[in-house]
Amino acid sequence: MSKSVERVRQAAAASGLEIEVRRMGESTRTAEEAAAQCGVGVGQIVKSLIFKGSDSAKLYLFLVPGDRRLDQEKAVALVGEALVRADPREVRDRTGFAIGGVAPIGHMGPVEAFADARLASYDIVWAAAGAHDAVFSCDPKALIAAAGAKVADIGA
Image (cartoon, rainbow, N blue to C red; front, side, top):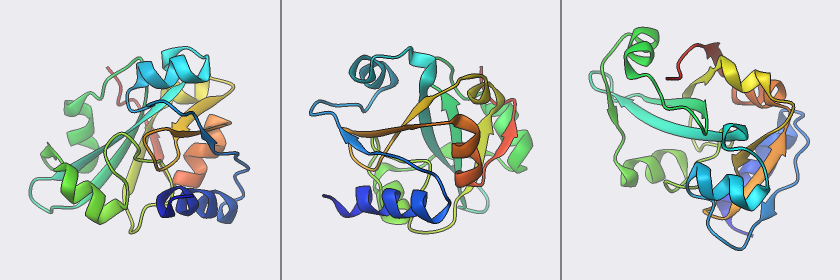
């Protein structure tokens, strides 16, 4: 088991979130791939998007349903600074996850998190578990709490 997947398991356990990590054998890097592998609608896939503050260089995590995209204007208004996509190398170095396997929990350092309000409308969501083929399912409200995410209307 990879260190990043184990970090996700430990973070879940520490927050009281019961998960079972599943290695799918095929890529779950995109919401569409993950939905096909998990047998659910694309909206039930949690996209974990990392952006960087252009002034502060602080990383921000945005949790968005797979069938929506991040509304950057709304995100900028929430964080109070312009945002740029974080470089994949920087994402890996600072969170411990490679793009395509970024989990909503288990980051190597603190990352301020926001979750789109629509996630809570699902009974179950699926999220990346730290590797390109690793996922877990859970109650979205419990996931939002475990990620320490502020709920907001950030999807488009």
